[in-house]
Length: 171
Image (cartoon, rainbow, N blue to C red; front, top):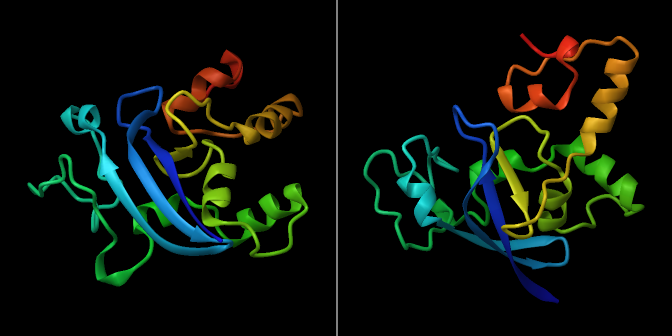
């Protein structure tokens, strides 16, 4: 059964401590098959001086491309954007999510993988169901347990420093 979902893409921008909405990702799926996607940048996001391109190839705007109020599609007949695909869990991450959900391999939809990845990932993007939804922070408990055992975890990104005690803050 074909379904269409609208997800909110958040970006952690340089100099910011909280991620901000970058735009709306529309995904068309049939079960675990991704059929297509489109993206529309948010107006306030485009007005930000520190905004980043969600995907420099298909969703670029730094070189003067007209993206305001435009529904954008992946280039070259692809069904997803490279920048969004980069934000998705890798094969190992997908197996972890499937294990948590007790799902067979490769049976979840792309939107399920994107929404289950959480915001503590490498990269600047986070995918959520809505504008007011709190981010999933699954790894915080794991990292906190490492801290309690004296295992050092360094987060060079300043947005993670405030989540841990001062004596364990990254330098």
